Image (cartoon, rainbow, N blue to C red; front, top):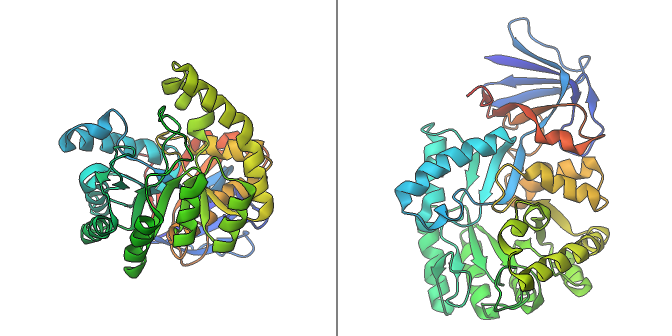
Amino acid sequence: MTLAIRSKLLIDGTGKEPIPDGVLLIEGDRIVAVGSPQEVRIPSEAEILDLSDQTVLPGLIDVHSHISLPPQLRSPDPVRAFWVTRNLRRYLNSGVTTIRVVGEFNLLDVYCKHAVEAGVIPGPRLLSSGIPLDSSSGHGLGVTVDGVEAVRKAVRENLRGGVDLIKIFVTPTLGARASQPTDHHYSQEEIAMAVEEAHRSGKRVAAHAHGGQGLRYCLAAGVDTIEHGLYITPADIDLIVEKGAWLVCTYGTLYHKDGLEKTLFSDEVLKARILQARAETPERFRRAYEAGVKYTVGTDNMIGFLAFELECLVKFGVSPMEAIVAATHRAAEACGVQDDVGTLEAGKLADCISVQGNPLQQIEVLHEVGLVMKGGQRYDTL
């Protein structure tokens, strides 16, 4: 079946100028043509979806997220599975059609990925990392792995489980009262082993690293994405650019009232830490942006708040177009799936959303999503 989507404005995710009255032509699960009405001929037999009062753009990609959240994160697997089915719908409703999951217990994300692909449950396209590597002095959110050989074994077990990437916790969280966010739980040798084993199998490595020596160990080892990076210094920025790593920004948890503020402000020490981070983060991001750091975005544990992440980028000085590209084309590149998703181009999967208004003029309109299509199938009608 051929489907033609008409829009008031079409943003293809590449960063090019938007197309007024843009037309998207879809056959099956793939895009076959995109352009102006003069450039794209609509076949007479095509079904037409008239969104001529809306802006159409690529489905959003959440590069750093979890699909079961505290307190469900530590619940038995069957309980978490019920919560996940709800959460995946919430992601879809927010316009997210691809998620890179960066840490779940017992390979839950791998099993959910298979269920989504089989059509058992509706959800975004999932990229799974399996059980994150965590030291005995770390988060307590992954499997406890200490020592080089233990790291090798843990990575291989995740790979055998069918993961798409490896996640390692290197520095503490902002909420770790007894330590600083720039401390580190893993040695350079342990981090290097994780990267070696993952890269040998063609998989990428995502490292929770706010800053400090642990972040520099990650970059030296060849980690592909630095998650959070709230405390990066000018020297760190230079090294990130030199190594070609990605910075995955997760500002929603820091700035939104339902993020860390909701959970940590009762502790005066942690509240002061959060407020200081809020004050310093815009300048740190500006330096990274001006230096040419490759960046993208994720919501961490803020389901449905990817639009808020883009608001933060715009407040920090990024143009609305660049912010959209960060959550589409750049996000796909950071995940290694740019051949299939991230932009509205012929040959790619038909992942697209629509919003009322123009996000290039008002980024906040991304909070209210209309059409949600993944692989040519509509999910907003569920």
